[in-house]
Amino acid sequence: MTTTQHQLRRASVGDAQAIHDLVNAFARRGEMLPRTMSEVYQNLRDFYVVHDERGEAVACGGLHILWADLGEIKSLAVREDLHGSGLGGRIVEACIEEARAIGLTTAFALTYRPGFFERLGFVQADVMTLPRKVWGECYRCPKFPTCNEIAMVRDLGVR
Image (cartoon, rainbow, N blue to C red; front, side):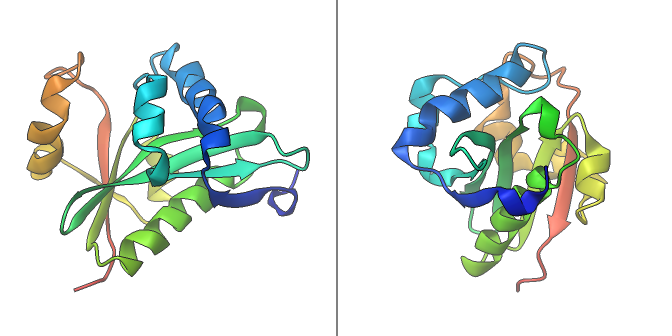
């Protein structure tokens, strides 16, 4: 399938279950953190979704604002059979465009797939260079302080 058959848009309430299912499919394998339905609804405005030609949500991801200069690409999930189709990249670029538009200067992601983010202009960083993330959210995570996700950062060229 080509990405031209897939429509990227902001998430709506009707997408919440699909977002939950996509994210938690990877969480069950330990590839991302699980999200409750409550968390999905509370953060729904952060999300973008990609729908296939049948209207099914097949990919999701969001931009979560952490501070005046910093946004996180979160919960990026693409249905397994569509990996390599460019859908994840489309979501990340939509998040980057939004981050720039609202004046953020840096975007980052915590990931087990750093090569994906490197192809999108991110560079590896020490997670401790992101103290607002670590002390604002990470410390509550069951994987803290032994998390092995890799921090990937992208300067947005906004000053």
